[in-house]
Length: 199
Image (cartoon, rainbow, N blue to C red; front, side):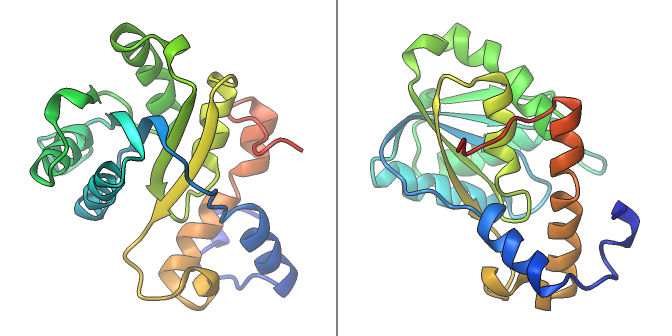
């Protein structure tokens, strides 16, 4: 399957079932040491509001927002999302910043030294990954490749009206999800991500 044909093609029933079972994972959440907010070019308010809800409900002690400047914007994804998180009630001093990352691998690689300098990686035992629904478990798989010791949880959000389990019935939702799904095996082979959750 090439990335080019993902938008037009319709997945088989077996593919849909496998994606729902293995890719669109959401783990049970328990209070974590760190919320890792992966940058986005859209739905930034939704992501910030979700982070604020988690904060109010006591699900994390610190957060990091990672994301660089994307085409068409003068501000980094980090700056935009962090400002919205603060406006939603999260104390600014609890939110670490990473402003250079342009992809999920860089989100993790560039953030780890920032987390280490501010908090000490050894002091972080659990992380909640927050990102797009369609990218799904590739967030914790990327984190697991570079930070295997920490416990990982996953929460994803999107603004599609289509229910998550019916992603294949919406053309744009389907295009995005199949595009991300197609990356999993090649990225594992290249060592960009590691299997998660582990058997």
